Amino acid sequence: MLYLHEVIDIIGDGQQAYLDTVGERAQHSEREGISRLVGTWKVIGSTNRWPRVVNLWEMDGWDHWAATLERQFLPEKKDPHLAPWWSKATQWRSGGFDRILEPAAFSPTRDHLRATGLKSWVCVHSIVRLSPGRCEEYLAAVGELLLPLLRAHGFTLMGAYAAPMRSDEAIVLWAAPDFRALSQWYATRRNDPATREWTARVTPLREEFETMWLVPSTYCFFHP
Image (cartoon, rainbow, N blue to C red; front, side):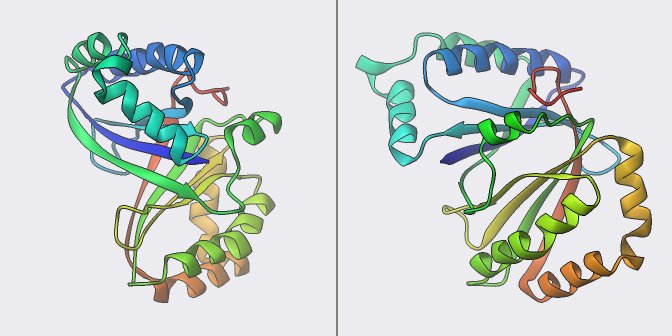
């Protein structure tokens, strides 16, 4: 699998209108085999810069992404739906930052997550900048320590990824059932042995990290 990760800057109060256009695009994109929407979320402003939206799209691999690029740039293969949609969406977005992501071996696919019956009111999204050469070690720690920690608290790992076009960067995404469960974990995390072990393992690997809480839109398959 391969993933397209987007952080979108929203103009004014256009967040919901933009999410609606993403939902519209997702239906077309999946129907035409372009990509599959994993999720589209609002950034909770009290946790990070706002107003922004985060999108995550799934593809079958690098060949699939190449076909997607052909639909965007090759005249004879262009997707006729893309240009009008793009123009419409610019009413509500001013730009953003995209990444191609490669999943860790234990990172679940969208089909796997759907099969679990996942439901979530809030997700935790971290962009992690690592010391040179430590990305593989960091993702291994996610699988070894963070994954069972999340399960023990009733949370779900949605993805753990390396960014091959960025130097030593990882993305981790996980879901909590509701705001109270997530807030309770944050309130007690310093006293939880498993959380302390996880923190001790990855702190030497990280240069910095940025975390934001996300609210899934109604277009997400896991929206309650």
